[in-house]
Structure formats: structure tokens, C-alpha cells
Length: 179
Image 1 (cartoon, rainbow, N blue to C red):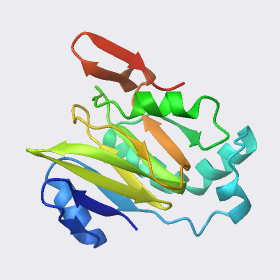
Image 2 (cartoon, one colour; image 1 turned 90 degrees about the vertical axis):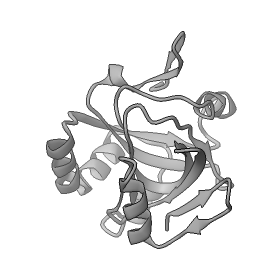
Image 3 (tube, one colour; image 1 turned 30 degrees about the vertical axis):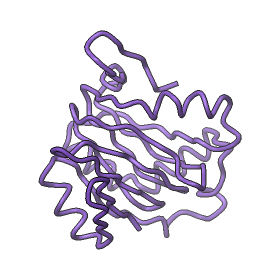
């Protein structure tokens, strides 16, 4: 399950309701949708194809519809990062740089795990997420993404507009990270 780790104090929060309550104060959404409805071969397949993508998205059709209606999102896709990903270290170097977006960063973890360090007040809070968990980092929140020791994650990404998901590192530098 998810875990919050506060870098300054070392404080850890592991209770899902406490995580949800704390993060909501800062506009970060955390929820648990579970992965029980997905066959293991679909969930664990990191060679993503159209059939696999459709199966995953259809399994979460109800939750995705509610999220889209509530938050104004219009599209979704599947993203996979693993040892099979070409230039994984190069991609991770981009993702690990502090940035923000003009759109929310929405991830539902289908398999694997990762860490979203987010600047909250004068601290950095590492939000550890695992399979079955949803995180929405709001537009404008300074954050980055890191793979954990498992070095793999498979997620549904949800967008208001593909252009809104460009990383803004500082006022003079942007780079599209959808690739």
C-alpha cells in the first residue's frame, strides 16, 4: 500500500485514510481502486499492445468515467516503464528533474510501484504508490517521479489535453514527456 515519507522529519504515514486526508489538504488526490478485476497475465504484461491496453481501460471504465466527469479529463492511455523500455535511464533522468505541469498528473498504477516526491510547504513528501492506487498531482505542484527498487511500473494516464502535460522545469525550459 501507499506510504508517505517526509524527508525533513522522517515521519511516515501508511494508513490509507490518513494518506488521503493529509494529501487532500494540498490538492493531491489519493484513492484505491484495486487490481482484483484484472487477470494476472493482463496486469503483469509489460509488452503493452492495443488489446492489453483496451482490457485494462475497460476494467476501470466506471472509475475513469467518474474521474473524467468530476475533473474534466478527456482521454487516457497506458504507460509502461521497465527494464525493457528503450533508454530507460535517459527517460528517468528527465522524470527525476523537479517540474510542474499546467494540467494534473494522473496515474492509476496497474502493476509495479514508484515514488512521486512532491513539494509540500517547506518539505518534500515522497508518495510511494503501488498496484491498485490512484494519485493525482494537481497542476502547478512541484514534483518529479522515480522508480523504486523494483524498477517497473505500468499505469493508466489520464489527461485534459496532451499539451497540458508538458513538463515546466523553470520559466525558460519545457520538454514534452509523453514520449
